[in-house]
Amino acid sequence: MKLITSAQNEQLKHLARLLSQSKARREYGQTVLEGVHLLQSYLESGGKPVQVYLPESKANHQEIRRITGKLPVSLMTWVGNEALAKITSLNDSDDVMTLIDIPHEQVWPKQGDCVVLECVQDPGNVGTVIRSAAACGMPHLILSQDSADVWSPKVLRAGMGAHFLLKIHSRVPMAQWLDEYQGSVWATALGGRNPFNLYEMDLRRPAAWVFGNEGSGISAETLAKVSATVKIPMSGQTESLNVAMAATVCLFEQMRQRM
Image 1 (cartoon, rainbow, N blue to C red):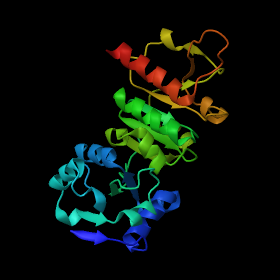
Image 2 (spheres, rainbow, N blue to C red):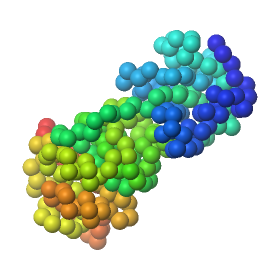
Image 3 (cartoon, rainbow, N blue to C red):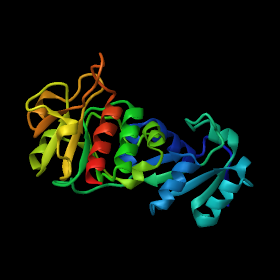
Image 4 (cartoon, helix red, strand yellow):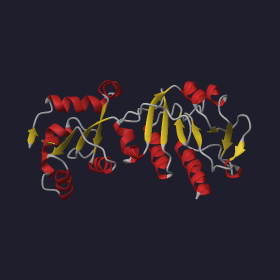
């Protein structure tokens, strides 16, 4: 098996660019999975890595042995820990890194269940929404052009493998997609026309849920196109929920009704 000992190696420099630059991820159509858990989730979903980089210091660890037993030797490369530490964003520098091709969905969904994020910019929020969407069996995730890069290291870590359970559509123009979507579109908002109480709605039919920016919420242009706005009842002096929490509440209420 190959061994890389220098961070100046071209393969590692390529990984470093993908880890740090969304432009590079778009240009090459690739990203990097950091850690054993993400690799295992990717393999369980049927994914095929481009290359797996293994920390030399963990050659005899049980988890590493399980991975090497599943993959062809040609897809694996050992890396010296000092070289690995210079490019990883993990606190633990001696972990697996996996180069993959970003799954590319050719056609936007025009009907059926969807989760839509408009200008949601915090990687942790995006990752949490992905986990909740996957847990509720939502098939599609749509992100506007100004949302966080869904294939960045931070979002991938926050998603904890749920990326590979959804069809993800990135950098989608909201106005165009809403014009093409054939079905009900619900948007969480504090105001807006026809506000509905979440717990009084019939959520058993397929629909699209739109969740907006952490500070400004959903844009006026998008609100003008949705079927209705939805309020989550709250007691006390609480005015709003974090976008990831709001999405989780709505999606699990939908799943509860369908069960």
